[in-house]
Amino acid sequence: MKTNTVERWVTIAGALTALTLLTSLLLLTGCNTVKGVAKDIYSVTEGIQNEMSNDNHGDDVRHNDWD
Image 1 (cartoon, rainbow, N blue to C red):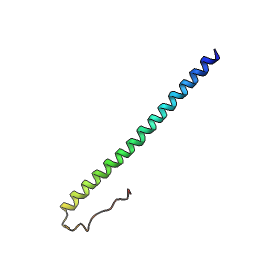
Image 2 (spheres, rainbow, N blue to C red):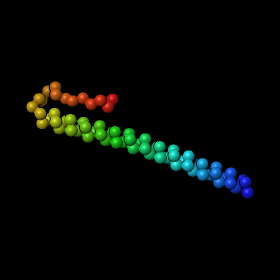
Image 3 (cartoon, one colour):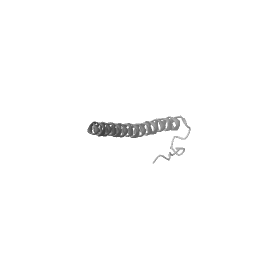
Image 4 (cartoon, rainbow, N blue to C red):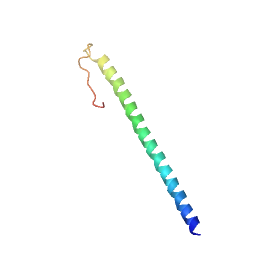
């Protein structure tokens, strides 16, 4: 009877470990993806602002602090 209890706890611990690793992986991947999309959107809006501004030489470019 004791062996079944130990096996059950090992199975539960393994399942929780796998779930924790999977969740961590998804969260880390999601953050990198959102950060990449934010950089892309920022660069597009920066380009639009530069095209619409009177300064055609690009002197009025705002720099981001992501890197």
